[in-house]
Image (cartoon, rainbow, N blue to C red; front, side, top):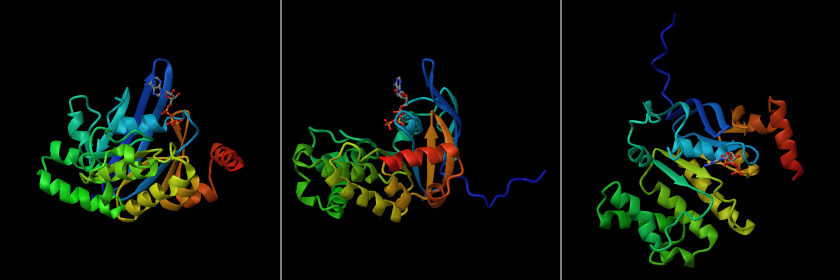
Length: 253
Ligand SMILES: Nc1ncnc2c1ncn2[C@@H]1O[C@H](COP(=O)(O)OP(=O)(O)OP(=O)(O)O)[C@@H](O)[C@H]1O
């Protein structure tokens, strides 16, 4: 028997046999997935296929019924692991309502750094202002979120998620609640994070974006991974019939 090669890098994230059911409804049915550092993985699939639930299990919002989730080799799905400690290592942005409405934009962006990571306020605010400036929102730092457009709010939510320099960024349909004209500015920010080497797992219905930005595309159907392929191969020559049907339905609108 050959020993595993020591040169093979451990994936940043590894899921093995992840299963989650709600009552009799099996929503994740044995998910195996590896994500390397700096990789961008798009989760695609019909509504209800399990994309959000998968992201929520990675972030330990949902507990797995079976299987394991490893973050840098640590089994974080072990119920004895401190979930808050794991969540502090992962940035998450949902479809909408990410910002606390009663806190200024800057307080939103700096809150986790200050409270969870114990960064002194002055340093957290310097970094927060730098991040807000990088997305053109420095002038809104002291404003409350309701002064911002939906696209601006989502961009602020994304910089809030990366303010603590998480090891992994999870994005759950971050553009699906936006008016079409605001989608582009949010996708541009995700693209720049991907270009900068942030490790991202994102559920998306934006196929053109997945094709352009993702290294790999993972197609989920009824809680199973049907195809996991480099983005170009996924869109140009999918192996599985169900992937072809999904893409055809998608292109048909
Ligand atoms: N807390 C819950 N209790 C019961 N059923 C749930 C719960 N969360 C999700 N589900 C069910 O699990 C299935 C998968 O939902 P999920 O939100 O993961 O799908 P999705 O692929 O992200 O869909 P969409 O693209 O519409 O966001 C759905 O049938 C949903 O109703």
